[in-house]
Length: 356
Length: 222
Image (cartoon, rainbow over all chains, first blue to last red; front, top):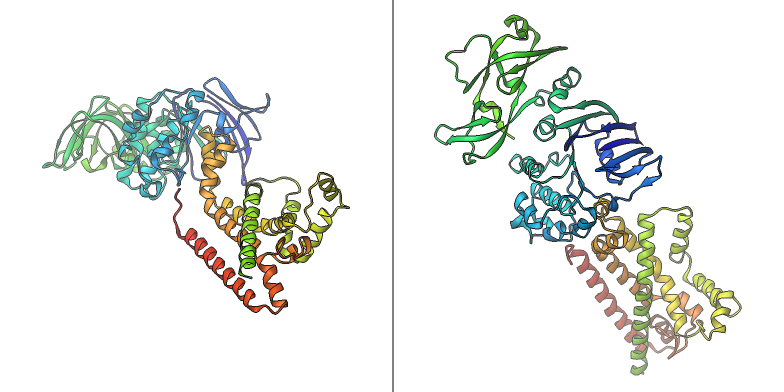
């Protein structure tokens, strides 16, 4: 996938030149960084001044070769932030709108039944658009894009819409789409947790310029980027499965894919369910001796791999099965005498682990 | 007497209906162009289309008289082919169509402008070509405004006086419409017929207003 885009926006010039080999790439950056404009440029909804866009071996745009395919011939599924469902059609007619184009687009073969089951929209099919919630609308918009059998799926901040509650989060559905359908995706977001949860590559934009480009965990823990992240934003994200749950104890035990067990607050999902756990880097305590007499549910032994010292903060990478990131203040680092290779204990409250 | 009243009513309703049906596709297309496209000289086209709204109807009638007169290129060309527009029902039709065209264009243009262009963009990414986008997305979302515009245009056509009298005259049994007949009957002191026609006009007006109010209230649904 080659994205070479230059376009004049009202406040700055968007200039991106990047080759992506990953299947799920995230475009990350603050609002107003030009992320949506870049997506619209790829979809053909906004004109580029110059550049070249090659997806799946097909050239969609090339100023040098005077190629500029119209949106309908680009075979791109676009899911805008506001879902933009057709208000005069039922849910069923919405998701079938692009089915005519499916054969021509020639992306991964997906049946209506498959998409309906995957996104759990069966009960909605006969409803009018005004009778579904914000989270449901996002799933319907995703289904509609998928059924046109696109060669690339563009998702514009599907989680940013304010009227979507936490319970309705679309993230688990996006992971299913990623894991069960062979469709490349580009995902726009300003939330690092979503990037870590979904993407295997991230490009970071700021005022139209590419400021970082790489694997999400590396980009988000590199000095320049981590310094910009707010308290909530630097998070550890792990994949795992539910081992056991007890409603009386109020907790569930999760086995991470890297082979470590964690206690999290009670989750009703049956044992064997795949889950993704998020732990904020600020919510991890570090001890240099085995802690005793504390309430935290998780105490994990590990070795410090790396310490990134920044202005006013230090980010530790601790090898403990998977790599954990913890954020401390510089005095804490010096008081404990932390350095790479040191043996430490990570203390994580059960409540600090959340299912994404 | 009552026979001529029914003839006048029927003739007016029919020609106004024909006028509305004829202008509908052109006005809809023009409205869509004005709402969605830009091109050099758009302002000129806009002005010409809206002209009949702002100049006196009699003046519009005079312009039409010149355009369709036998000595003008268009009128002469039509006359050579056996088509005469002026001073028969076709003149009434032309006058009504030209006078009501801008009203329909205005309503339809507003209706198109209110359709979120994002939906059309999304339809394009789903593989729809321009005609399908128009008929499957834009038109179904704008249809209420267009129908309301049709009612407006139809009412305007029924009430048309100034341009009609210039282009078609006021010939009883041939070009006399409701509005022209009310005027004539009052002039002749035949108040009974004038009031009968007034009653019919009022009933039609009530029906039109009721219908458009109803359309305005119903939710988007087809």
